[in-house]
Amino acid sequence: MTGCILCDSRSVEKVLDVGEQPISTHFTRAPKEHVPLFGLSLAVCHDCGAIQLENPISFDQLVPPYDWISYREPEDHLDRLVEQLTELPGVSERSSVLGISTKDRSAVDRFKSHGFERTHTLDVHRDLGACNSNANFESAHGLMSVDRSERLVERHGTADVVIARHIFEHAEKPKRFLQALESMIADGGYLVIEVPDCASNLDKLDYTMVWEEHTLYLTAQHLPFIFSGSAFSFVDQFSYPYPFEDVLVLIGQKRSEDQNCFDLDESASIASNIALARRFGDMFDRRTEQVFGKCRELSQDGRKLAAYGAGHLTSAFINIHGLTEFFAAVIDDTPEKQGLFLPKNGLPIRSREYLNTDTISACLLGLSPAIEEKVIANNQQFVSNGGVFQSMFADSGRSFLKAFDTARKEVAFVQ
Image 1 (cartoon, rainbow, N blue to C red):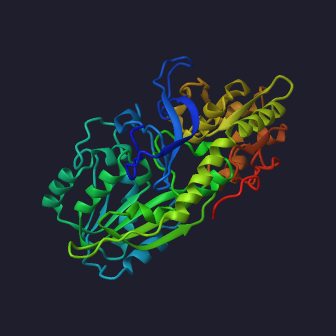
Image 2: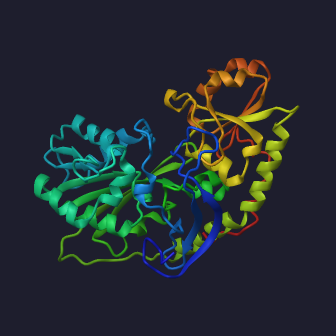
Image 3: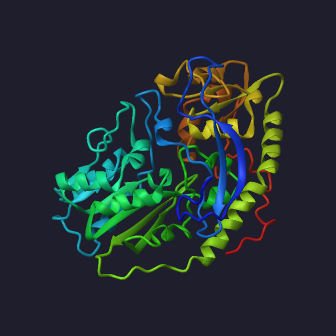
């Protein structure tokens, strides 16, 4: 690692190494098919407090090999958020609104419903020049630059509101990405950045949080400081509660050239993030032992476990903790995934009917806790036959780790 990806400091401490991991969307067609592996480790910067991947993976390596891969982000808060954005000083129906990726279309559409006619969402191929036909939002931040932004401004003009939902935490070079966004915004215009709040999963020792596509692991206390030294002044910050991860929204306003730049005091945030990151790394081996013990307990009478949801969270849970031996299959309702295998561990992806065979003793849910009830309701035969549903997530009410004391009180955090 050459330095912090957020502030360029060389004072970066590695806190966790989970070994070589695959790209979770690179499903294979055979259980032992070779896939590229990448070293995955977390670090924290002593100077700015940013928790980050030690060696971010290039965006072009992350493009999925399938055109049906989709990404879903929480949206229940969007009606309220867009209402709040329309009330910002200087924002009116005459304002132009720009979405950076496909993840922003639903927010941009809500602006349209408020009477905003000057709206546009960037297309990763047409606007950003992506060559891979499967490229999506994972490529947007890597393809953006000040030069490209200036060319887009020549075509579309500057925007009064730019929305970047769930993309900043993916940026390999967040400073460059922020500068590119700045070039697209009119003086006095607003930048709206939405990211997952990682504080709870860091605190609850949920290592499924570590994802090869996320370069930054942001918290509410630390988030405003991504504007430090930039052309943006802090306007407001919101938090919207969700199962597994809350959603954080940061709003900044682009200053004109004659306005003074200012920085906020980051000391408390830095100390808190360093303590949080160190504990997360220190407790990994203990958590893995607990997970192993629970998986062994649930695997009874020669039967094995199933996981429900062939996404990156399940992939992280099984691969990072090394749990392949306990699982027979991964269940997923996506038709295109049937017959494929999770990368690295080679577990087959099956339909829900596989749960009703006599090979499965328990199923660990790797889906959002918000849809657990629906999944269980659709698999009542498994339950009637004595099958058990539990969750692999620490934040779920069905967490198979809830019996463990996660030892949050063992380490005194700096608040």
